[in-house]
Structure formats: structure tokens, C-alpha cells
Image 1: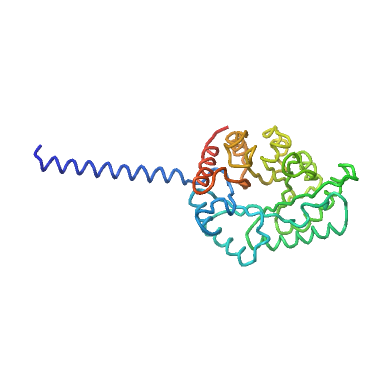
Image 2: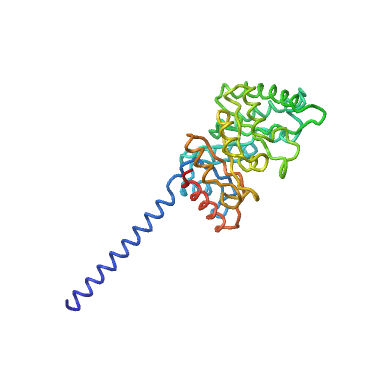
Length: 305
């Protein structure tokens, strides 16, 4: 081979290697950004380094997320709600929960049978219907207030059931679902009426409405009761929504003790098609922390139970 042929062959080989490298990078990027197998829903602030709310939605969609949640959505202006909904529609993203009853969530609103506080809650439900319509939401979080130490727990649950039946009457005609969230009493929320998944299961069965289901927050239930997969199975028919956070720390999967690969694999194999809200913080700051969250979900989502 003369010098000219050698140089031509070397150039061709280099071009081939470069093309192969670019193809490999593109394939890796495509693999990284394929949609997750479950509808994991980040929230505003989780990817704050990329820009404003709309930028965060676009970034999440590019990374393969197909849902979003915003606890404080009801507190936004109608204009902001509609703007967010338009972008989510364009991106093909499902809206997750917002909180219905910020004003009555941290009081003995459900446990006492008081008609005034009941009406306050029902006003919140009526307002939530309008918010849900603007943002194309189906599920909305209801926190069932605090305990009343003067009453037996069973009587408090009976009052709660009565109140939720009135709420269900508001939501049923619109096909909306309030999801009741049991909250752990050991670390974050002492004194709440609903802490155990079994109580939430009982309440939903008693309300007996398609508009009243359980929000099974895996972080809270790990702290309160553990035994996650069996408790999920026993509550399955009444679960409408999941939320996620590892324990201890309430950060992304893989930072604590919960085997999220097995938990996600289990609910996927059972056919769960709803939203899995990412209601936790980032274990690290900045872009490094945001990438760590995405990588954590990739790792857990790819696990087969």
C-alpha cells in the first residue's frame, strides 16, 4: 500500500469510528430517555436547575417521565393552572394529585362530626372540581385531619366516613377521585386520624364510592407499619395512587432501606396503571442531585421482582 492509499484508508477508518461512536452515544441517549414503565410523577422544584416551571416539565418529559404532580396546584392562579395544563397536554403527561383541603387537613375536621368544619371541607371539594377541570386532573389528595382525644377511635372513623360520603357526592358526577393519605405518626405527623393503611382501607370500604380511594405513600407506610408488599396486596382494591420516598431521609429510591426495585416490580406486575408520585427531596444539590434522582428511578424501574 502506498502512502496515499494508506492515508485514505486511515481517514475512512477514523470516520467509521467517529460515526460508530456517535451512533453509540445516540443509542445510549435514546435508551436513557425511553419512557419509564410506571407513571412516575416529579414535582416543581425537583429539577429547578433547568429553569422555570415549563422548562422543568419539558426536561422531565425528555427524560422519560410521563406524569407530574403539584400539591399546591389549587393555590395557583387559574391562568397558571391552564398554562401548565396546556404544556402537559402537549407533552402527553398525566396530571397527578394536588391537595384538596389545605385549610382543613391539620385540624380535627373529620373526627368530630362538627357540621361547620364539614361545610368548610365540602367548600374545598367544590373548589377542587374547578381546579381539576382546568388542569385535567383525576386524583386529588385528601388529608383526614387530626384526632379528637375525647372520642374513641372507632367513633372518629365513623364521623370521617360520614363526611367523606358527602365529599364523594360532589366528586362522583365529575369522575374525580379523592385519595386519602395515611400519614406516619412517628416522625412527620403525630396525631393524625389516618396513619395505617388498614384504617384507610376500612374507611374507603365504608364510603363505598369510586370517588374515594387510598393514596398509599410508601414512605409513610414503611415508617408506620412496614410489611409493604403484603399491605399493598391487602389494600389493593382500594388503592388509587402511590407516592414514593425512601426511609430514612425521604429522598429518592436507593438512599434508604426500602427495596424499591421489588416494590415497583410488584405493582407493575399487578397491573397498576395510575400515577406514582415522587413526593420526596433530592439527596444531593444542583444538577448532580437531579441526575441522581433520574438514575435512581432508572435503576429501580428496570428491576424485575
